[in-house]
Image 1 (cartoon, one colour):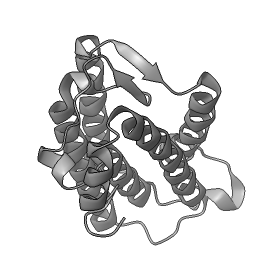
Image 2 (tube, helix red, strand yellow):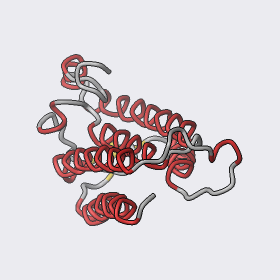
Image 3 (cartoon, one colour):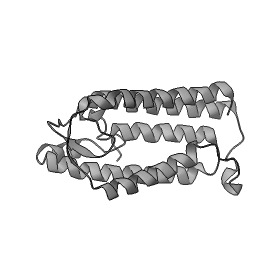
Image 4 (cartoon, helix red, strand yellow):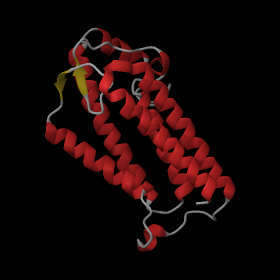
Amino acid sequence: MHFPIGTGFSVAWGAMATIWLAGAPFTKAKLRTVPGTDRLRQFLILSTGFALIGYGWKHLGVMSAPMWPESDGMQLLGLTVTCTGILYAIWARLTLGSNWSGRPMVKQGHELVTRGPYALTRHPIYTGLLLATVGTAIAVDQVRVLPGLALVAIGLAIKIGQEERLMISAFPNAYPIYRTRVKALFPGIW
């Protein structure tokens, strides 16, 4: 990866991490969450997927093979997709406000947020993360990103399932209506 483009990825992912960390102290108190073993399983799957994509593995045999000829255009495409995903995730995080949590849970005084990006998808932070991860994978351009993307998708699907169950229990009347109106990750598709 070329220096300015690589720096762009660092800035984009770093900006997201900074916003997440800065907002964490301002969230509502926990009321109900998923069991620790469920959280650990989902965390390990996601972490492994992100590590396959983002870590600078050098010697993984066939897994280190490029998928297409290296080009500035593909690097720039990857950075553009990554930044688009991160901006969408940040918009969703800011819209969620004090209801946000890094793990599936219901907060005290939890509000069902259906405005902003939540009017487009029920889990826009995950939509943004998935898009940003795909963009990073495009730029990394090694076969190892394929199982990495699969693991990230599986980890997010598990987390979505956990959150869906919590939201249905917290909002038994409103959430099913919201689910029929708004898709989980991709507007009009899924």
